[in-house]
Amino acid sequence: MRGTATLLLVRHGLTPLTGGSLAGWTPGVHLDERGRAQARDLARRLAPLDLAAVVTSPLERCRETAEAVVGANPEAPAPVIDDRFGECDYGEWTGRTLRELAEEPLWRVVQAHPSAARFPGGESLAETAHRAVAAVRDWNARLLAEHEHPVYLVCSHGDVIKAVVADALGLHLDQFQRVTADPCSLTAIRYTETRPFLLRANDVGGSVAGLAPTPADTSADAAVGGGAGAVPAGESHVRP
Image 1 (cartoon, helix red, strand yellow):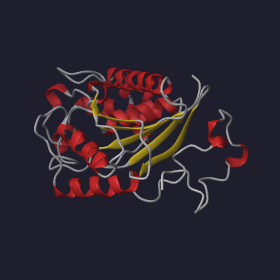
Image 2 (cartoon, rainbow, N blue to C red; image 1 turned 90 degrees about the horizontal axis):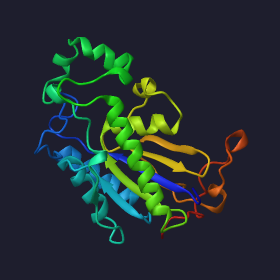
Image 3 (cartoon, rainbow, N blue to C red; image 1 turned 30 degrees about the vertical axis):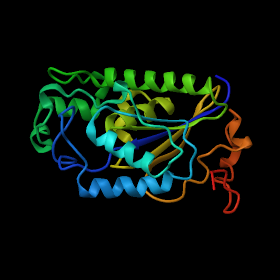
């Protein structure tokens, strides 16, 4: 892998079901007023970035979030749907309340040993993780064939984002429940020739300075001592 690819993982904004029920692949779940406001705020933050691609889960709540990002950035490409970034297929758990599901024996498996969890009539979390990580690898290769240091956005779902982050950190899937991805949060991962770097996790506010790579960011070496962080004000490498 030559060059670097910076992946911006965005979870969709709030919907009427978020936090209460497991929406899964339920059709027709749209952003509510809160979610639309979150998407607008995120879009304003991301507007200065030159995005090589905008990719989204096929589900409405993700498409609407991605469209808000594109709407605030006239130079951004049109969103592309990739089913591999779709929500986990929760099967018979789809549409049920989280309070009810917490009483199921499988709930403890999902919490403590997610790599062994398969949802009745649906897919396993391991399958979800595999397809999402494979999609990231594919998009990295595709964009690096056209750009030296592409920055691109993927709008997806909580469990998908957590699985991608766990992979980037070299964690077993059983540790992915330690990762948090709030609605409309931004998680950034930079992929280099030898290793990924987690730049941000569950970021819900603040500047995007430092997400566009500088020459120093193209190295695959880790910053000994932690590095100096994002570029100072007035030296941003995002588009003015």
